[in-house]
Length: 168
Image (tube, rainbow, N blue to C red; front, side, top):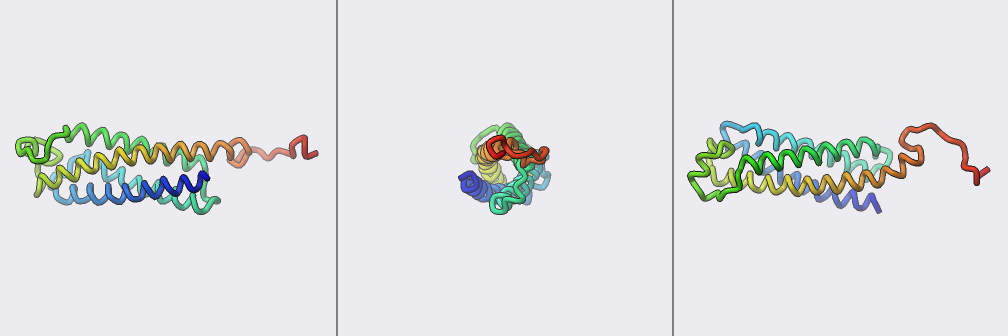
């Protein structure tokens, strides 16, 4: 059951990470000054790829599903998507992409070959970062729930215990 949930969540993450990577990459390609916050969004997209690919492989090959690693990776992805979503939303100031005075004054868009297109790409990227934040938070919860059994049963590297009293 948990594996099916993980596969569903990781598929959702895959689609939105693919879109995020394309949008941020295109915004960086069109912009000559490459602002740090857009570069950070691309770093987050790359981190998302690493986390979700490991998560997909771990969902299919249970021997690679190390609970602590999944929890740490999902936590990092959740945190970085939250930060990138906040930073891009704060730097974009949520204005209309048809307002030329806004486009010329915003340093994320200022210097782009096509400011309207870059503005729309960054607004869409912000939305996808928030969707990915929710998806990685859900994946973190599922990873944590599935790891509770492995930590309590000693599979997480604890000392081997003898048989239970009812088995003697």
